[in-house]
Image 1 (cartoon, rainbow, N blue to C red):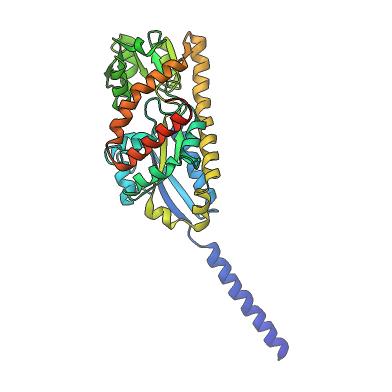
Image 2 (cartoon, helix red, strand yellow):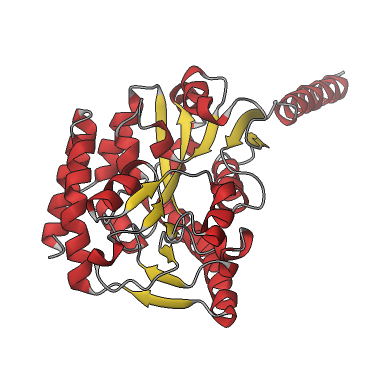
Length: 344
């Protein structure tokens, strides 16, 4: 009888444990929807969107699966911030300045004219304890019920021109395709800014409708600018310009604690920023190598001209600073940072 009782208990224990195991194995994986404002083929999709999805999934230990969607698949690109704010989208990869009307500090984090010149500068400005401008940026997004996760370094934003440029004053009298803060800076530099969508730039350059445009080097290949551009001047308006990853605040709070801990770790985010930034830059470098063989001439602005350009840019920055307290604080931090570096 005693042996039978022991056997029965063993069988019951095994059954209970198997049920617990199967329940654990059957726990549903949390699915999140992530839409990119950029299509496959663009590095912001291929690199930043894809790699950030992997980062979040890995941080969750397999408890989260992210479904990726292309521009317009779930909502219009113009509505992506509102969609994330309301929870229609869980995560988005966007160009922040496109939504500066509702989140003014986004104009700053995307890269204002002559603000920074390298990924190293962004890392110091965003995360170093002396500046930590990422805290200000996050506070600015928070009012939209959005957690700003990380910026995405997008190579560089040099001037693609059909005339040589040695001094800022050389812009005078030229028509340059640009919009927003870039257009305002070019106007201060003496150029005439011409708003044009990306798809129309090639023919405008070919026909002389415009004499140049700030644009990432990969456009030399993807948009065939190498056929219609003679000069490329670095660092251009800003290096690197930036997109960013945003997450619905309620979704962020619902992530497993270990995932939030990993995704809140500064080293993790900085390493991710550099890794993705270098992958993006590799595409730019490949396009430049081909374009130089094609006949493109490259040059770098002298330090005194960078300072001259930055003096003009301050007027643009100050306009952004007037939009809300978060933008103002970010601009004040930027000025302090550049003054510390002897660049302002």
